[in-house]
Image (cartoon, rainbow, N blue to C red; front, side, top):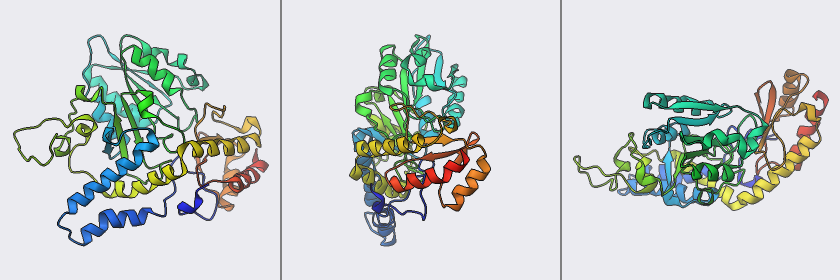
Length: 369
């Protein structure tokens, strides 16, 4: 639907769950807002560089249903989650962190560090039941400190009922973090309406922004209660005050920023966020789901190894052919781009895929399923 906005390979690209395609405008964005001012030796170089980061936040805000001031740039999700974990007050009697064994492994690695804070991890079992809010009932207990909730699981393909789960957790006083890495840009995200305490995400995947431009959305209600340990001059309420003896946390999300910020990744990522806004997330989501319907509907149900129930899925799916190696070789010969997970072949749909891509994939897979 918006293929003309992107650099496209010679064959169908089904790898947006790993890295979205590069927008045509990305090179110019990098040159105009980062490299150009640097090359010119501009006297207001940092003003231009910081403006580039601000432009990224402004471009991302409508994509995730947020206010730009509530978005804090991050290097990656692991760092963002680490900052959250060590910034929070822990209420007496709240000793548990609830997450899911289906979460991306880095989540578990980071949250395991909470054991040094006296907290215990509780892992929910993976499976299709996660589409039911009741499957998350362990997170609604009085002894839960924090719930980590993945919006769309990268391998399972399942989309969790975020709003319902968050409402129940909020009613029990549980702090909530939503991971939108596999949803933002391809599935509708609504930070303001959801009412999570935090949302983490990355531009790398469906936001088509490349590596290094992650983000942290912080609910204004919880921000004043947070005292991040990993601070720097951009965490200060006035970064340019330059008083080494005085530190005061910046209001809202900026307190999670840290030291001297990266610029180039966010200059690049702005183009992707603007392309997503141009196409409209609702329209992208609807088109993605239609193509998934077409593909999975044309293949035997027994060959589908991920969650593809309508209304309960993201933009990726796994097909398990009878002979995965032969199928993979045939797809590669057809210049179809994909990857492999859990004994199968993983694909994803995004705004630059169309009916002809779907038809080519179906034709290439059919002899092997």
